[in-house]
Amino acid sequence: MSKLTSLNAEVLVIGAGIAGCCAALEAAYAGKKVILISKIPPLHSHSVSARGGVNVAINEPDAFAHINDCLNAGRGVASKDCIEYMCESAPENLHWLEKLGVQFSKDESGHYKNKAFGGSNIPRACFSKDRTGLAIMVALIKQIKKNELITLLDQMMAVELIQETCQVIGAQVLHLRNTQLFKVFANSVVLSTGGGLNSYKYNTNAVSTTGDGLSLAFNAGAALRHMEFVQFHPLGLRNSGIQIPEPVLGAGGKIVSISNDNVMSRYYPEKKELAGRDKVSIAIAKELSNHPGSELYLDLTNIPEEKKFALKEASLIAATYLNADVTKDKISIIPSAHYLMGGVSCNINGQVLNYMGDIINGLFVAGEAACNGVHGANRIGGNSLLEVVVFGRLAGQNAAKFQKKANYQNASFKEFTFPFGDSKEKMGEILSTLKATMSQNAGVIRNENGLKEQLKILADLNQRYLDIKISDRTHFYNQQIKQYVELKNMLLISEAICRAALCRPESRGAHYRDDFPSEGNFFEMATLTYKHELGGMACELIRIS
Image (cartoon, rainbow, N blue to C red; front, side, top):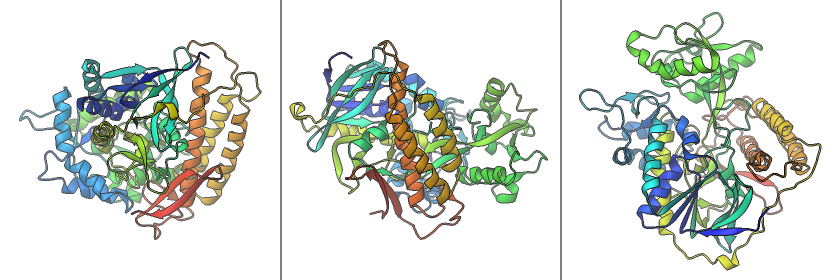
């Protein structure tokens, strides 16, 4: 391992998906020198997989209905201020994206076309053909490459934040191409690394989405908020977890049993498949639990001709991963871990908060890694792309304003090291056990016994992790070193999810416990998970201020 070298910037952005790119651009527009690092090439980021659209009340009189849908989905634990800001600023952000070059689909009259998502009472998702996330990312990267104030470095993974007294002033970064560590110093740091649900066997996340930013913040003293609220996509392919895009349900898709019984009509006679992702996923999980060995299917064989345009992406996915034709074949589905409503606790400005609610100076967060409460207990489809743009831009603007000069000489950190050698413990075996047990004990349906059992399993896996040695000593793309850091992050995020789920003894939104199947008296209550002063992880249910 070569000696640490360093780079300097005014703003360091960690993660180059949509949120990170928006933050980097806004900081640069404010005249700040920005270093933007990414573990993978930006156009391979998880943001690219967001196909559906961006919720914008562009064809409505105002944002009232959008705000109301978000509040209803949030089930009393969402931030009204953040929701109102997001929904009311949505049209301006849509036009900002268009100025950058994103072309949203419009009809012959020039009006925006809209898609319907579960959880919304009316269609309002603006989209760019079937690849909205990709279209936004392409436009952002073009702008970033033209901006002389932004230095984009990919194949770089932050492994630890650097702190000076009461301020985050940079990060230790692992160069994945040559396995060298170096430091990036900055007056402010923005975390935008996405969620981290790869600890589930069935998940829709990119393999690179391993909770890196949440782990970095937690170890720097930040609290994690609402970690129990994991959204499961109801339309995951049973063989892989890859999801069929939700608009197929708005086009008339049905969820049926082997005997062609319309399952959702029994659970939600009025809204059926459009009852919301949480409700549909819970219903599917109940059916599969009540009938061991059975399967449920997505039936798209009777979609009306005028709505078959909604099947384009679903047809491609089914043909690619199943060699199936959705117009003729029913698709076996299972709920797949999809989106983390929880994340690093922050305020509306993206400033990271500790357990006491105090701001951690110099540290900001945006995107799925963040939790300002905008989703509450559940996220409606079409809000994720809106959130990353709105709050990614805001985090970048505020990171640019925070320019308290960092004293690099007083930085508090030790050089990150890796345990080279030979051992019997295998990272792949620990990861496999983690995925299987998290899906079983902390999946769609949870209870006290399962969560406590999972915490015991995690304690054992963490102990086994300490015995891991890295046998590969090569410097060129050493995958073992990368996997070693990622596995540690996934174990931390998994424990946070379980502790928060155990801490909330009720069912609310995407968090369902069959030992507490109804909502309790925890309206306006949030779980905060944090590093205990005596070591280890603690979680408390507190009143939202």
